[in-house]
Length: 130
Image (cartoon, rainbow, N blue to C red):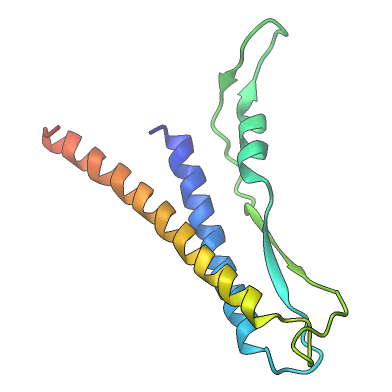
């Protein structure tokens, strides 16, 4: 697995961790009057990173991959300004938040497993294993 893929997985796991915090905050404020739910947007990171990593100096070249040293976060926190009083008090829908929390947990576990597998394989190679 290329280093750029590991970086993408690490960025994705950071996004999932931040999304977990925001979803928990929304759930905690379900009864808070005038609270506006927040969300985390994963700024189409894969496409942006892939496009920024392709560098060519001639239109006939396929392109070479250059490391992306962009330290900018791959996600953005936004506030939902909708006036829907889903809960009767604010715009937080507990069912939607809970389902997003479950989905986000699975996504984080996937990214963490892939990163862990990569480093375990690297460790095996260094030790001289398969």
